[in-house]
Amino acid sequence: MRFEKSIDIEAPRQRVWDVLTDVEAWPRVIRLVEVAEVVTPPPLGAGGTVRLREHKLPEGLWDVTAWDAPASFEFTQKAGGATTVVRHRVDALTEDRSRLTLDLEMRGLVVAVIGVFFKKTTRNHLDRQAEDLKRAAESSS
Image (cartoon, rainbow, N blue to C red; front, top):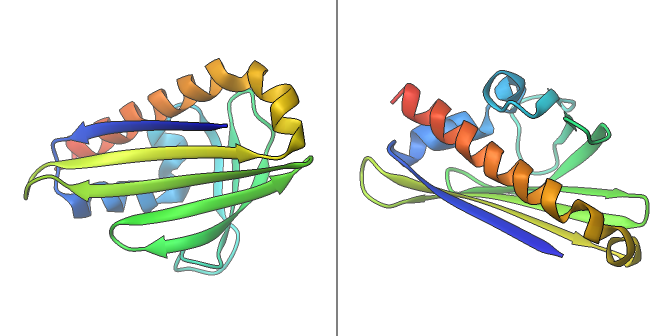
C-alpha cells in the first residue's frame, strides 16, 4: 500500500530542506507530531535513528535508510509484521520555489488485512504534514 503527497512551496530548496531535516523541531512545526527525537549522535544521516510519535499512532523508532542532502531522505520502520518506508524529497522548481513530496509505503501480510482501516488516516496525516512543512518553510524564507 502506497500513498504520496506533493506540495509546491514558495521557498528555495535549501530552506525547505533545512525545515524538513530539523526533525527535533517537528513537534513545533507539524501539528500531528507529538514526539521527535534524534536517538543517534548528530548529525542526522544514513544509519541514524529517530524516535517519533504522531497523534493517534504508537511511538516507534525509525531508521534513516537513505540520505542525499539536500534532495531526499528515507525513514524505515519494521514492526508488527509490517515494514513502513517514508521518503521525503525536495525538488527545486526555480531558485525560489520548491516541491516537497512525501511518500509512504507499507509492506507485509498484516498491511493487506489492516491497511484498509488506515487509508483515510494516512492520507490525512500526509496532507497535514505537507501543509505544515510548507507553512514553516514559507514563513521564514
